[in-house]
Image (cartoon, rainbow, N blue to C red; front, side, top):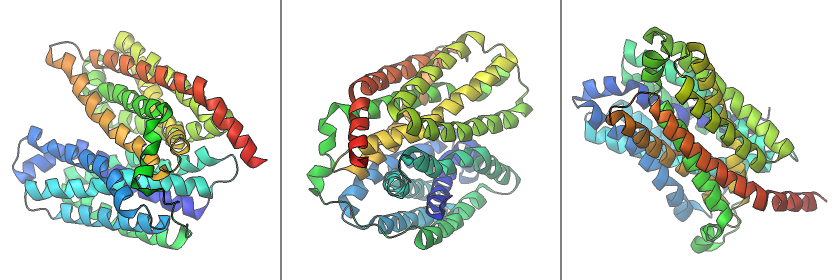
Amino acid sequence: MKKSLLALSFGTLGLGIAEFVMMSILPDVASDLGISLPVAGHLISAYALGVCVGAPLTVVVARTRPLKQILLGLMLLFIVGNLMASVAPSFEVMLIMRFISGLPHGAYFGVGSIIADRLADKGKSAQAIAIMVAGMTFANLIGVPFGTFLSHTFSWRIIFLITGLWGGYIFYSIYRWVPYMAPLPNTGLKGQFAFLKNLAPWLLILATMFGNGGVFSWYSYITPLMTEVAGFMPSAMSLLMVLAGAGMCIGNLIGGHFSDKFGAGIVAATTQCIISVALLSIFFFSSHTYLAAVLMCVCTTGLFALSSPQQLLLLKNAPGGEMMGAACVQIAFNLGNALGAYCGGLPLAAGMGYEYPSLIGAFFTFTGFLMLAVYSCRYERKIFKEKKLTRI
């Protein structure tokens, strides 16, 4: 494995821990800062808002800078945000630090995807991006459970201290291993967003948002579903989350491999269809204990099997605005998180069973599948023809 790609994956590992660990340590943070759990939930929203603001802000401020330099600047923001979060004296300060920590997230994926694409061997772009994204899957597999253990055993502040220090190592790795790359062609600020005039990127952005929203409609309420409906003991949830994280790791690698072999659009559409069927099956069969666990793994595997093909597709469909295009995946991903968690909670608020969020999720993911199917039929062949001509 190229050290440069490994350095990029170190970055997504840190970003993944910073984003997802808050969901599992929220009660500890709320207790320490003297706030209610719903108020503490704003710390998750603040990070997501930072993701959505940071990507276009980076395009505006740093689009003419060398790519490696942009990554280093983003890592400095990440380091400051997490180190300051570890010593935040109040909820207000913590809220600001969470926003700052989220600013580099989407932009890092955008710039990192461009670098990974340029570093990839011929015909291996999706696999190179999958290596970069692998850090995010390992964050869910190892980093978040370990962070949760540290929070429960010692203090939640240790997690952000370690994450900030890890950011220092990421900075060093990028500085040493990622080669210099010239700035992207300066198409002007207007040119960076010109790709959004076309239908193709909107199909991909909305498919990402609905697809991810569908999974998180179900995944946001996975614990009560598995314990109250599927019949698992609460003590089994840690093992189930490890299995879910393992599925994410496997799915990420599978998605990258098959996208290079069969086409990213076809792979993304097929995966989205499988997730939709799995979520619908959860609605009907979640009371069957072990089948519920298998279907959970199918969904989490599919979630990250979509990641690298969607990242690559938006990168290729954003001529003149590659940085913004690649970052749009993370913006859509976070918007999907918010949409899914909210909509998945609606049937529960109405007094329905814990299996109903998966029914909403199935509808959302099927909508995403239709968009990806339209994209694949209309645009995939054209991209591959251009790709072959470029190689010739």
